[in-house]
Length: 305
Image (cartoon, rainbow, N blue to C red):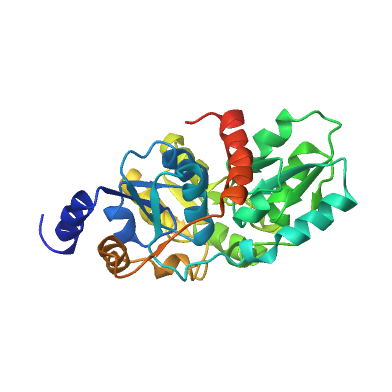
C-alpha cells in the first residue's frame, strides 16, 4: 500500500491512535477508519478503545460523547468546525425550563445534543434505540424528548401516546419530502425504500422501513431485496455498497447531504494526527460526570453490542 493512506497508517501506529468515523463521512474517510458506524455503534466502540488517542471523524457532539466515555483518552475532533445544527437548537437553560414545566416527566435526550444537555437528562438515546428505551419505561410514565421533534414524533407514534417534544430537527433530514419518496418509487419500483426517523412523518409514512443508519445496514444485509432507495445522508451509500457489492442502492435525492459531515477528508485526519489540525475535545468534569450517567444508562439498557 502506497500514498496518503499508507502514510496515514504509519502515522496512526506511531501516535498510538485509532480513527472512528460516522457512516455519513466521505468515502475516503470511511475507508481509512478503524471503525465506521452510526451514533450508537460509535458510542459502544468508544468504550472499548485501547489506543491512547481517538481521532473522531464526525461532528462535535460525537467527539464529546467519546471524551465523556473515555476520560483517560485524548479525543481529537478531526474537523473543529464540524458542528450539528440540531444540537445547537437546545441549551441547558432550555431543558431546565422544560423540566420545570414538566416535573414528573422522564427526560430522554437524543445523543445529537451538547454535553450540558445530556447532563440534565435521565437517559440518552440514539435513533437505533430510542423506541426500545421508551418501551422499557412504565406505560404510564410521561416522557420529555429532546431535541429532535421528528424522532420524538416517531417514538410517540409507535408508542401510541404523546410525548412532550422540543422544537429541534436535523435540517438535512427535514429536507426529505413526500415528493422525493414518490419520485424514488416511480424510478425504482422494485426497490425497498428505507428512511431515517429524523425525517418528517409525512415522508416516513411513504417508506417501506423506518430505520437508523445502523438499522439500514442490517436490513440491507439481511433482506432478500436487491435494490434499495435510501432516504438519509448520502454518505451511507458508500457503506452499504461496500457491505453489499451485489446489491444496488439509490439516494432518495443527491441533495440530502450534511455540510458538516462533508468537511471530513484524509488531510483532516493527517493534520489531527500530526497535531497541526483538529481540536482536542474536553468536557468540564462535573458536566462530564452527569452526562456519563445518562450515556451509561443507555448502554446498560440496550447492551454493549
